[in-house]
Length: 116
Image 1 (cartoon, rainbow, N blue to C red):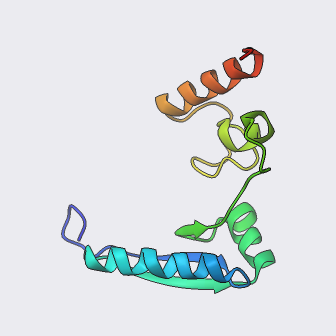
Image 2 (image 1 turned 45 degrees about the vertical axis):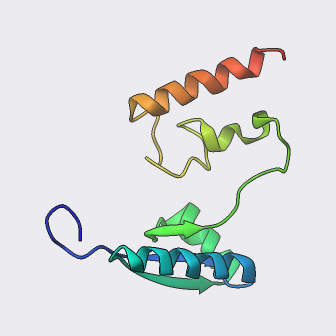
């Protein structure tokens, strides 16, 4: 239950074709059930998943992967910067909505020009 005593219930959408990810979602579901939360795993076709996450924003939680496989974070600035197209929390912001996002923006911009 949450702080007001209401049950915690939500869905996790994930790519139905990725059996490892569906399995991971069921592990998360089982773990959260032990904490008293009700989680429904909803495996859907990948295109539908991407549309829900990036277009309609019609989801509670999504289990998916974004990444280039490159250890250099420069290739994923669109994820980390608060105004990035694939920055999936506080969507569509023109400037950071939180102090921690502002700090991430500053650190990511700084690492762009810092040599190892």
